Image (tube, rainbow over all chains, first blue to last red; front, side, top):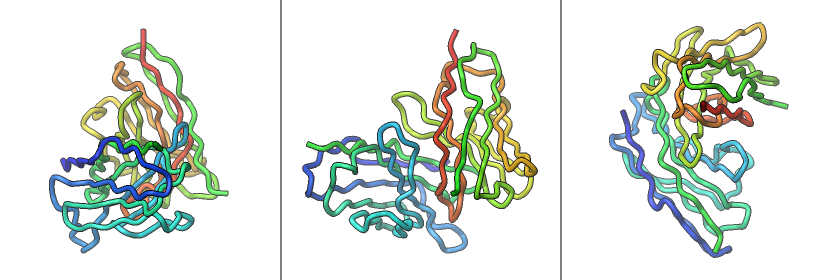
Length: 114
Length: 116
């Protein structure tokens, strides 16, 4: 099974400042079809998860452009250019490369406002 | 509006059973890979099971042999039959629709508590 490791697990950030979360997979997420199925989700307190980024860097419609994803192979990053109060929550990376035989989430990174 | 609505959660004793339902509107479950994902208290998201390509299914090792996913296309609903429940199955269970290897649609979740 692919293991997803996120760092940091907690990130206190001042509003208006940038934030960055790293995600590393235990093996390459490049699928045989050439795509890399790495996504980022946000879970605000008391809410279901929400997809932000799919296929490493594609932003879902309606997601603010301050969110961006990058990376390749086994190393990926979610960046928030200027954190806002509404960004508080837990962020997860997730691999779907093994779909439909398994999916794995990172442990989650709690973003807090200083 | 596109919506997934879970139901069926509750309090059950260890060894007991529950059936969760996920009713879809504005969205066709038969045309999509549909998964159940859970969030145990104080922990992170964990994928549980998926149904795809008709009646093909996959399960996480932690639930294999105890949980069964199914769908009723006439009701546009996905189910999760959970047997031999354990305290570690306590979680909020979400229904999710997949596209491009990502869970892009989520329900609000239903809480399952396994306790004596």
